[in-house]
Image 1 (tube, helix red, strand yellow):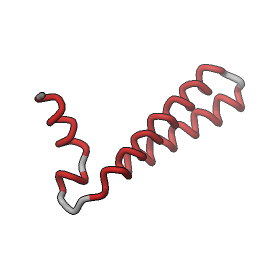
Image 2: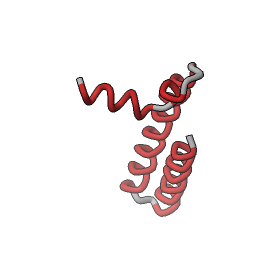
Image 3: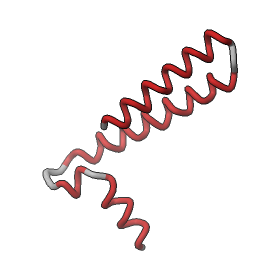
Length: 68
């Protein structure tokens, strides 16, 4: 969850920098980072429903899907 917050913060910083300097590249990068951070935070929030560590982490879910 901390990585999601860091990702969102970097996205906001780059978006503000892009708006101040009027650079479209930084605006797009900021929006993409905010989107990825938001989606990642939403997935983490949806997966927090269980009491087991394996349920609360996305890593076993990703590894299980890669092995199929």
